[in-house]
Length: 374
Image 1: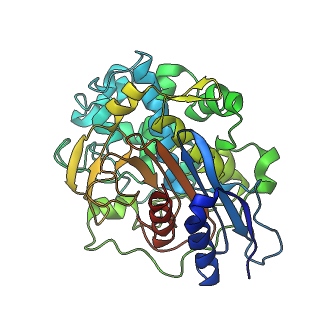
Image 2 (image 1 turned 90 degrees about the horizontal axis):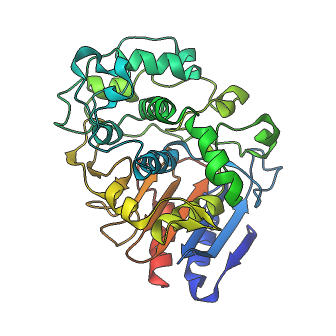
């Protein structure tokens, strides 16, 4: 019997039961789930092992790679620039990044870029996969490309590339990297164990991932899917290496705890404050949460509604029952979400990856139990 650790207010006993059930059913290696109500953590549970050999316990200091759940943090960082008046959602990207205007992209706006409409999900032709470790080079290569579909006509999930695009956009406006600004302005002052670009001093706390036993199902093979996922060069080799942990990829290599993510998202679900640190005002959250495009995504096999970098909960309701909830899922099963209508937020992290691209049954069971307990 796996020991369950952490805190769980009595009214949320069903969440603890759901968490324990995933371990009892052999669906977990190590995992953590945290849930906040009105900015207060009411559930923070962890259990299992941080390594595949099951010699290192998964504990409250374990950092987990959360892959695309990182995008929710990156979206918040871009929204902060808009809130500060340094960027506009309807502003052409090329106004702050002139090179991006190449190949007819001069009119692509910030909100189109961040909602996966810019037609730059990757490279159909082979590239050296080690280039992914050099963000300025990848950003320049993407800026020089022509869109793979008419901008604004559809979304096509920019699985990895969106991190390089918004990372360069952030740097052009702020002067710092997005990960540096996150650390200096939010994570450090608020005491969040949340990193994009992990210092070597923290690497020994990282959970070892157990990859899924099968590949996700993407449906019919198309060029956008090849560019984003289905080629040997669509992502760097050596994920999980020290180089991977160090580099800043705001789309894919956040390292964090469920507690830190739930606190971060909890600020978005309430008044925007986190222990005296301003994250994003409720008005700015509403502006970022507005639907930018909805329909069948050209990369992911889902009908999706995209906000400004966040997944909107409609029409799939991967993040509980509230239509207006925003969040993001990560490869293998992680997720984070904020529900301003109910004042709740949560996060799930794990190191046994599953094949579900979005809506992992483990996280959905936990979220359903949490809402049922309110």
